[in-house]
Length: 169
Image 1 (cartoon, one colour):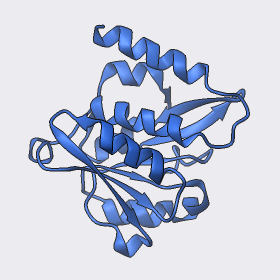
Image 2 (cartoon, rainbow, N blue to C red):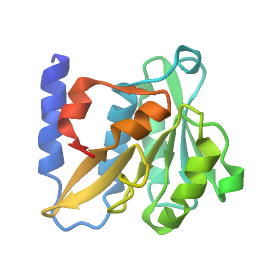
Image 3 (cartoon, rainbow, N blue to C red):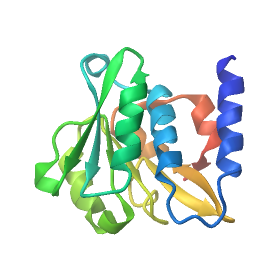
Image 4 (tube, one colour):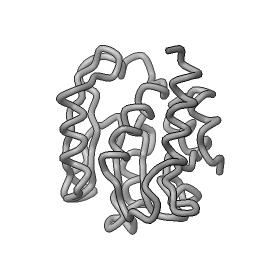
C-alpha cells in the first residue's frame, strides 16, 4: 500500500474513533508510531534508540511499551522512559505530557528548548501554547492539532501527508 493510501486510512481512523471516550491510549500509541514515522529528525538523531518519554505516571505507558515490543522507527528500537518531574527529563525524540500534567507544559518547553523533541499533549488549548501535537476530541472523535511553528522550532520536519491530516494551528 503506498504512503498516501496509508495516510488516508490513518485519517479515516481518526474520524472513526470511539465517540465519547475520555482517553484511548491504545489509539494514541498507534498515532505516536505514525507521528514518528512521518517526522524527520536531524541526521544525528536517526541512529541509536528512538526514545519516547512520558511525564509522570500515565496509562499510556503500557500501550507504548507494547508498541515498542512490536515496532521500530525506521531501524531504531523504541524505548519508553517515564520521567517523574521536569527536572528528570532526559533526551527523548517524543515527550508526552498527559492531561493531569498539563500545567507543566511551559516548564517542559523550557527544559527541551533547542532540542529536537516533539512535545505531544492531550488537553484543549495546549497546541496553541506550544506543544507540537495536541490530541483533541472534536464532535466526540479523536483528532490532532499540529503546531507547525513549535515543530519547526524543535528542528523537526513533518511530512506534508501528516500535515494534511492535522488541524493546523
